[in-house]
Amino acid sequence: MGLIAEVLLLVTAVAISGTVQSQNSNDERQNRSGNALVFHLMEQLYNMKFDIAAQKKQIEALQNRESGTAGQHKAPPPGWPYIENVKFKSPFEETPTVTYGLFLLDSLHNTNVRISTTVTAVTKTGFRVQISPWDDTRLYGARISWMACGK
Image 1 (cartoon, rainbow, N blue to C red):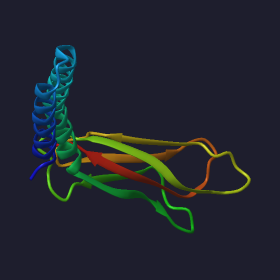
Image 2 (image 1 turned 180 degrees about the vertical axis):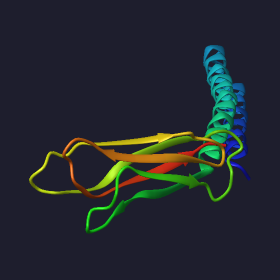
Image 3 (image 1 turned 180 degrees about the horizontal axis):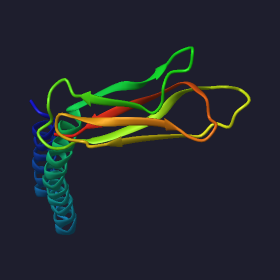
C-alpha cells in the first residue's frame, strides 16, 4: 500500500474514532473542533498528493544524467588550446544543462597561470569543451569534470 493510502487510512480511522467519541460526549463544541481537525488533516493530505506528484516529476527529470571528464595532461607540455567534442552515451529528449569545473591544473612553476575553460554548442547529443591558456602560461595539463542533466 502506498504512503498516501496508508495516511488516508489512518486519518479515516482517526475521524471515525473522533466521531464515536464525540457521540458519546455531551460537549457539542468538542465534536465540532474534532471534526474540523480531521477535515483540516484530510485537506492537507490532499494538497500533499499534488506536491508529491510535482516532486516525482522533478526527480524523474534528474534521473536522466551523464557525467565525465575532458582535458589532457602530458609531459612534455602538449599543444593548446585543447578542444574536445563530447558525445553523450544516449541522446537527451531536450537540450540538457551542462555543469563543469576544473579539477586538474599543472603548470610550469615560474610562469603565471592563466586559463580559460568553456563549454559551448550544447545539444541533445553532446557539447564542445575548450581549455585555453594565454600569454606566458605553460601548461602540462588541465582537466574538467562535467555533468549533464535533463530529460
